[in-house]
Length: 169
Ligand code: PNS
Image (cartoon, rainbow, N blue to C red; front, side, top):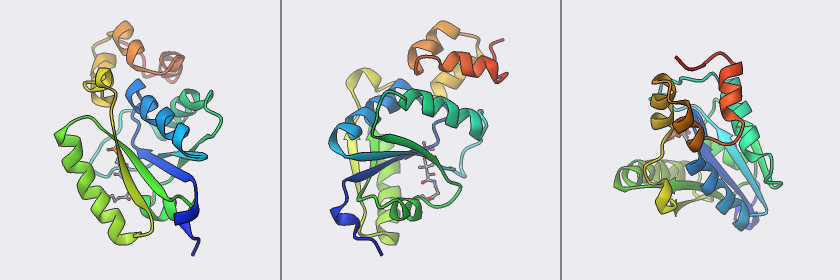
């Protein structure tokens, strides 16, 4: 097994349905701390996604295109095994509030049980992003509030959403 403790590689996992400016802030801050960061699109079995995998990947790639040490990856497997396979020493998650903390704490304990050599690190969100979520963005899209949704998405994401036919009412 690779000695992940010595790596300077982190993984930022999530559903990213779609990726928001809040996620991107966490990603940029992680990229400033680590040599290499994987933005990992994974499957949360508790969620039914609005966007298909290809669209989520395309938007995520666009969001990371100006951060040279970030690579977007996709897996329908387990987070701990992907992190191990990629040689990551840390799983980084953004935390907005107590609800996030409670949920992420459970995930962290589960992942540590399975991969004790990989630490989960929590990054508190930027205050201005505390109320931003993919759920909010999806609601704005379904309500046809294009300008409001645009502000919460990476530049160019709206065009991909329209091109892929998820459009606005
Ligand atoms: O953005 P989300 O939906 O909160 O991200 C959750 C995600 C996708 C990171 C989580 O569901 C996950 O790690 N899925 C991969 C499968 C896995 O490892 N499940 C065990 C996690 S406790």
